[in-house]
Image (cartoon, rainbow, N blue to C red):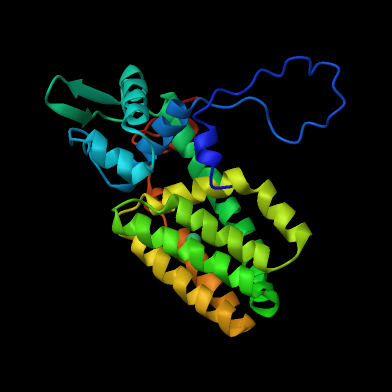
Length: 269
Ligand SMILES: [Zn+2]
């Protein structure tokens, strides 16, 4: 589960000989290239950072750390945003945000993401809150060790100034495993890609990784204590924080649907 982001680094294997294959298509084969995914996330991050047109973007190294990807990937993403006319790259002088064109592919992708995230967060709450309660009731010593390992991993990532994506994934996976319900685990696995989106979106926000780590520690304490009610409440609170995204308050720079603008042109046919 923690390797999912990395999996996007590798080209999707060609489905050769799959034409007459009998295996059910469990996962979509087509993958968006990593730099396009990162271009969307980068733009989303720009939105969440409340940068205005004319503002300078953070440096490559900072963006790479914030988004948990390589500098090369950030560079490719910036090229894509430049091709779409969303940023200006001044030689030796940094990258600057231009007025966002709602017709640009990356802007449309961010709008689509904003539409999709609330339902993913709702699904996470529907599954992970009861999972936390079951984990408190059923956890074994090896489960607790795996939960602690997830905490420890995120502590190291946060201490290094990283978003803590792998530690967060490891922690939630360990809690899910501790619930000992294969059907719930399967449903969580089904949502894995969508959950990765909510995770990267949330943890890219300034100040969020240490706060998430703090939430995790509270969940872990309740699970260790076998206190199902507190574990459920702590998970509910955590997912509330995860869903507190500046992105949701973002308005596209220009009216997207001309039919929605009644202020002018009242006399149009
Ligand atoms: Zn978390």
